[in-house]
Image (cartoon, rainbow, N blue to C red; front, side, top):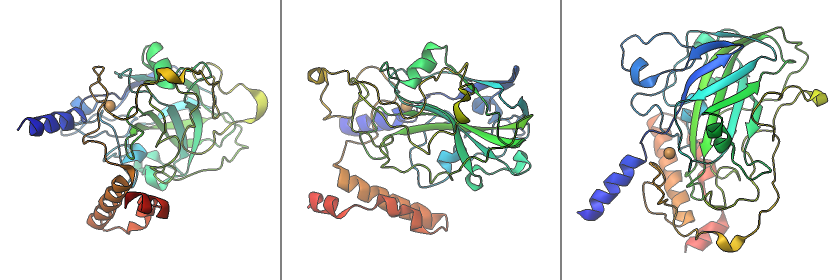
Length: 335
Ligand SMILES: [Cu+2]
């Protein structure tokens, strides 16, 4: 009975409030985010620039990468307002709350809607990364910088892309249990902006979501404990889109350390806590995984089965589930 209660409690804690963007300031103009608790509780939610978040659990993590939830969040519906933004405008994201043990990168992408973003489905679009920060060379995580800046994140829009309507996907990724497969937590949202006045000469290479992320990417399935000093971290997704060496695009951003920062090793490995347990004990509301940590191969197998089951249920092909398959090496390990 006690064990049952404990597992119920930890399952509940896995869906407790974490955070999302409550306001965007674009080119000096303030826009509310999608306020899932109130907007999502009304029959006809007010028009927003941000695609809908689920209610309940609009601020809970996305875990699985084998479906479209990670693109713009669960059940995201196109937003009906569009924020005007000059090319090169400053964008500020204001988050409502965050846990300081939820450490990881802050990443923002754009995708041209090819016309009207009010009917846009993020999974159909072509994305490029316009801002990223992970582990700074000072050893400070981007999420910590965001918290220190009053839960805000700033970036500058590109100046050299074609004018038009874009979906802007902004996310934090929490890595506190990411030593486990499907342990990383994604907190994405997508907002409509219309960029004008750009020079238009660049056509950035693009990726699709959710395919841009894979459960075993080095920045998603990690080999370090975020409670210890981490020496390097590779931000997931495609390379950052940059506009030559003008160096101006990221001015005013609180993410000066772009690229794939590999900070200096900060040594003292002796002080690192044991990695045996993935659960935290420092008062986080979402530190522990919903179930005890199985060894990795059987967890892959379960993810594969989950993936195939979900694909079948949604009438899709299980082709994307291939990435959950074990390597021969891992099969052997399990025996
Ligand atoms: Cu959490």
